[in-house]
Image (cartoon, rainbow, N blue to C red; front, side, top):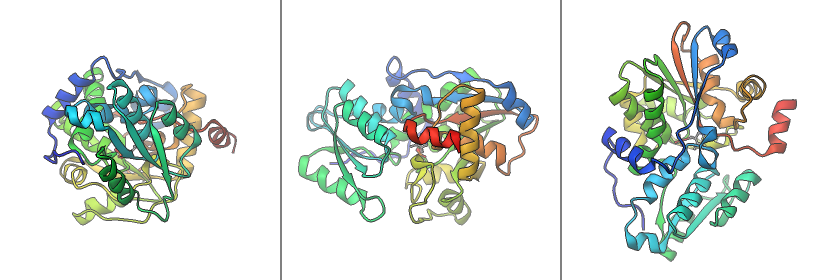
Length: 324
Ligand SMILES: *Cc1c(COP(=O)(O)O)cnc(C)c1O
């Protein structure tokens, strides 16, 4: 069983998601940094989804989707495939809504993400991300167990939930000139774009991908979804092969630009966050800042929103990034 609705989400869905999430998700803080302002010659605002429940914005989309299950779906439970943060988000949402959860994860997913998923009470099944097709495995398991599959980005309820972070951002920081958002499958970016179109039409929204896998940039240029091999990058939350059928048209229509950031720039950003801002950010979570700092968009003199998407990183891996 998959979630039935494939109607493209609208801003009304983002607003409805914000109501559903009220009191369930954290309204994450927006941080400032004088050093960052000086470095970029701009006014920077950092929306800290690394401080969201389960450590990433994914809780927003997951809870919004599960909260709309029918009684029968609730009873059979939810199935998800994920490199980590979607898994934790589904696992916690399922526990809060009292339903079973089964998560299909790559066997090389960060140990902390796998452990956290199990701790939230979900069952975990692993696969090899370079040789096996996670979608096929997930579909088979969903069919066998009658569970409802909630994809990590390409579903209207997920996209709408992810958009609530940008919605809060625009409420808390009016008159942003730019918003930089990291891109994997494009759920966070698509939701942010819907929020921007309705609430901050003056704000130019820029997607940031790992340099190792700029499928989104290629797709927007080509006018259709371009699929690439799984990119090798430290940004494990953005190791996607393609944008989704629902996220792509929204990104194509509303994104102002797509830029990339190298792994080297991500490490530099992680160090900056640790040293200057005292916050733990995972490599994927640093994409937006690295893109604003090293990308092709001239942000000097502007009010710039940076979406920090998550902070889940194995401590030993994190220590290596800081020490290198
Ligand atoms: C999932 C994830 C992303 C990518 O989000 P999409 O909606 O797939 O584009 C970025 N950062 C973090 C921390 C994530 O967990």
